[in-house]
Image (cartoon, rainbow over all chains, first blue to last red; front, side, top):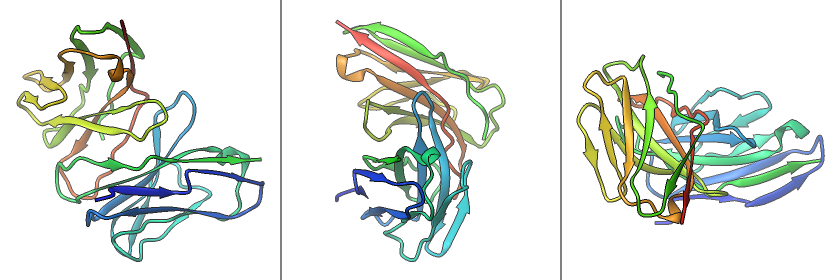
Length: 113
Length: 111
């Protein structure tokens, strides 16, 4: 089991460029989510999915798109990157049942110039 | 989700017990208390969770007051590797609900 795998680990973009952050899990988890973390702050929820074909917005969804075509993958898309999206992005998954703990990836560090 | 209140920072000597408090006075009957931690530059790590009863695992113990309005995470013998940000989160026992993080408590363990 690899757990939750995020790629790439680091990325630098120019303002206006588009990019997809990849997230994959091999635990057959139904629930997946994306967070961003900025200096001095906790994690903020961007989008989440309760299963293939179903997504919903979190606290800070603006500027981000997601899709969930398979159980394993939950990519996060930045259509037109802005400097305010410079952050560390974490993907997480859990069995979508009651009180199951959530597993996190190691993060993608994104800088937008 | 119910809001939680944690101290911004705490210090602990290596080998001593670290007791991290959390207030969740508006917790609902179906909401669990979860604890995660985040070591610098890593993704958050699950520690423990509970509903009403005290819980213990290989990492920590969780003490929940009888009225469930507060809880304490106990690391029985803190080591330098326990230096991290600790997050207390309450979440309903319901499929599909999100985990909402606050700013957590920064625990510094020193020798």
